[in-house]
Image (cartoon, rainbow, N blue to C red; front, side, top):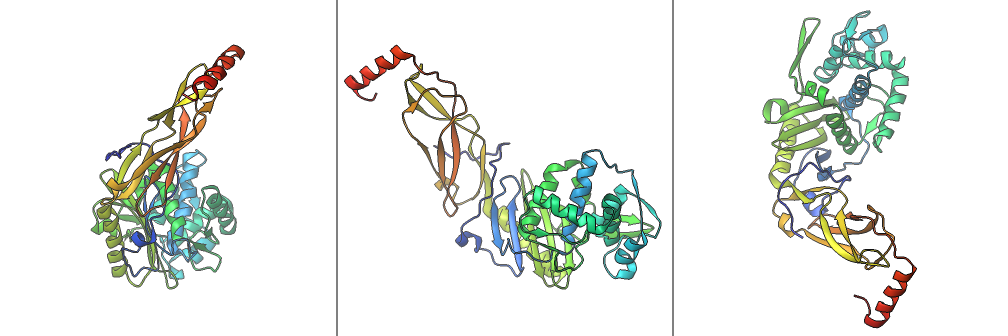
Length: 383
């Protein structure tokens, strides 16, 4: 089988990790890092990517995810208004010393403005207002955050608040942050554009988006920065160039400048060294195999789903594919029955296997047909 050097709409589910030798080809001063291809979910570079660490304001992405989910299911609208409590003002306002939207006690704020206040201004007050109005209290909202995290497959996350303010029970891995970013981009295309807005003004105070890549890297369009003393300067970012999108998460850099330089270096590495390739197409016939005791003598094996892989550009030609199946297969057979697989051997990466399915129904022979087949086998052997 040959490898097709073109893109397709199909995505093979599952994450693949590049081998250690390739993953360590890049060095970074960041403490925890992951670089993921958006389409394939493959991890192109990682450093302590599953360790649960303080996510700082990057965990606001879960607060945004929940708000977007409620907008999507119709239980919330952009024009709804939430009231600012004294608690939200005290914990998240200007006097707290953290990032703020500069909301006032008793102010009624449109949901759309709160979203912008969270994404662009990183407002802790905006997060607490959303949490209290959606769940009754920030504590109950944190319970919801943990429930949603489990539902969407975040295995190394624990939420204690809506903001990312320091708490020993508030932790995420950079892998979970990348997966969360991937969910946001995929599930909410109608709202994702908000992450690329560079400024927002509320109560006559204009603040800029803190994401450094929005100002320095073509194709950057999200997602969220974070900073605490424990977490360091951190970033969850996405960049799209042509048909490719990469997601990067990093923590632990020591300054805005270092965060900007390291994140740009890692993104450029991903685009420079890797590309996406169509390997197999759904419905593609791989083999015909004989059928025992069937009304048809053979059956075709077809690929179950499209398979796109992210590969090192200098290794793509070395991918080896082998069809693996037992033959013959005994009737009856139903279209879609799994009868084998295609094993894909990728230099420097774990092998991948894609199921092979029966391309049609094959009914079993009647009694006289079976007798005839047995006689043929005894006389001529397997044909």
